[in-house]
Image 1 (spheres, rainbow, N blue to C red):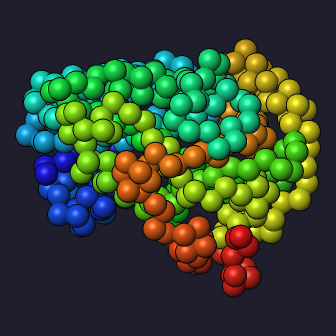
Image 2: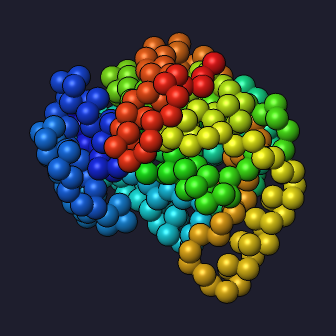
Amino acid sequence: MRVLVTGGGGFLGAAVCASLTDAGHEVSSFARSTHTALASLGVLQFQGDLRDEQAVSGAVAGHEAVVHCAAKAGTWGPEREFYETNVLGTRNVISACREHGVRRLVHTSSPSVVHCGEDLDGVDESAPYATRFSSAYPRTKAEAERTVLGANSPELATVALRPHLIWGPGDPHFVPRVMAAAKAGRLRLLGAADKRIDTVYVDNAAEAHLLALERLQPGSPIAGRAYFITQDNPQSTEDTLAALLWAVGLPPETRRVPRGLAKGAASALEFAYRALRVRAEPPLTRLVIDHLGTAHWFDISAARRDLAYFPRVSSTRGLLRLRASLAPVMQAPARTPPTK
């Protein structure tokens, strides 16, 4: 197929482009800038902004399918910026698909759309959307997902994937945040020690998009549905952080503070930053506290059944790849990653 990937220059988007190219699809990217890595794959690149309806339409024209990875991510920032990119930008993608007769739209969503700040222990896709959110990112991603699934029709088949805490070589978000907090001495374990979380290695998340694309068509069983995508190997937050810190050459974190205390501090900092109109991100945010202090792992039986998805790259192999990618800038830690 001729497939357009929005956000093709991003962390997940680039992996999706590589996965689609390897599978023999003709791939294009729509992003705000061009990327050498995509050019080396033979990916045709369109430059533009999701908020520009004409630019989106021009990029979508001539394609048979769209994989919509582009989004504004983050734990902090003006609501308007998240809304314009994640909600209005997604509407522009849907409108362009309809305008140009595109029949398949795979949307990258997030498990945060169902996270109210309480434990999520092994929930499946029947879990309702959250009724309150601790930041603009999950709130706008929930609205975008609803819009995409609501657009499913006999003319345009849509599906939403919810990859959870994507990591791997080149990660610009999750791993760097953990590493920066650890190096600054700000990383702490929060709350009870029995909270489990799951993550997903970037190549596994990309393959899930390929599998969904190749099974999606109007009237197919996956059309109009959402799917959680993970490593299917939940670990305690402490073990998860220890493994990532091992990969970046840092010792495990052992200090623990009450979640309520940390969330109170985060709320006070957010209030102060808003009152003073500080654009920089506070050192603590409620979203980060929710992610570190609650259980959030998911039943991926539906993805296994309907997409034939399973994590081909194990967590151990992924950690070794991550460590190897960072080896030039760190001292070598122990040879065996601390995974179970």
